[in-house]
Image (cartoon, rainbow, N blue to C red; front, side):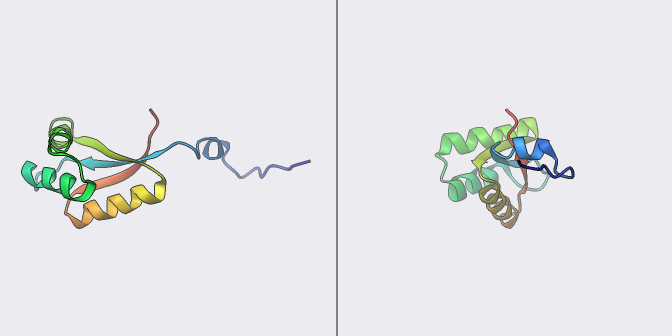
Length: 94
């Protein structure tokens, strides 16, 4: 017989397999060409993909640029911060 810890949040246990995403947010500081450069140089996106994501950041205020394990997404966020971009980690609930 297995006893469940009553303090454990069941939602967290059942959603642990949900992938995580890196979200880059729009800001008033960085030029669109610089954001495209960062996406190409860091993520290795082709020019068209980098430009599409940059436009999404500019037009929609945010873009999901990567998905995977939480640890990998946290590394991406740290890298984006190093480039001066605003980024966060979030669950991919789609």
